[in-house]
Image 1: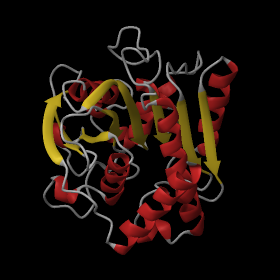
Image 2: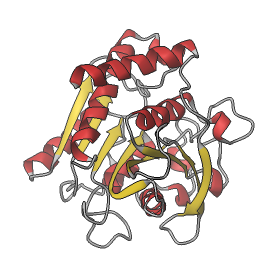
Image 3: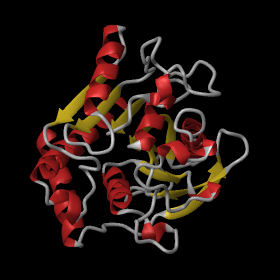
Image 4: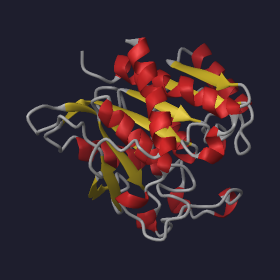
Length: 291
């Protein structure tokens, strides 16, 4: 099984980099309510090729980073202009048998192109990864649970960068507006790719306590956020009994898994991605899929 998963991950890299990888139709654009009670979000649903409505599949909610859900070159914002990373991962999850939904949380709030690097202090409060974006994740979870092709009891959460920070909050007992979150009411597991782990001091006085198995993946050469800070956050959480682990890739940068030539021409990124894709698939296969 591990060999098959690894082959799938390597195949995705090769396919996307060569421009030959689209194995399914464009994802379906949908709208649904954030759990903030006021925002209508946009999502793009990737479904397994064999899905015909007669079988329910596990799901994955995908949370973008500070640059948003779309290509940095996009002038229109739709399924055709999703970033390479989100399109590739949506296809990867669908090939693995999941119904996956990248959530655009910035566009409906007026920032479809996301935010530039170094803009953290000036971003509007309604884009907070602490107070707001976790509610978007729960809104997407609620939406997936309305679909006849989704097993709503088996949904994972996958975030990148700012969306990975939101993922850590959403999977914790500090999730805003969610009463006693658990694997019974929330997500079955979480993947957090290169989050910023300061989290506005949210866990300065108490450890992060994820209610579901959580895996953090980071790179030592990340130019935007600190892998060491995440290592400390995870170690403190584990010491308190938290079901969380971290994998740190030597020399890998921010967005090491993005299947762009800019990122993948860095040898450490290519090596990290080759490990991270099958590792993520195996993690969700173990913790999210129904058995």
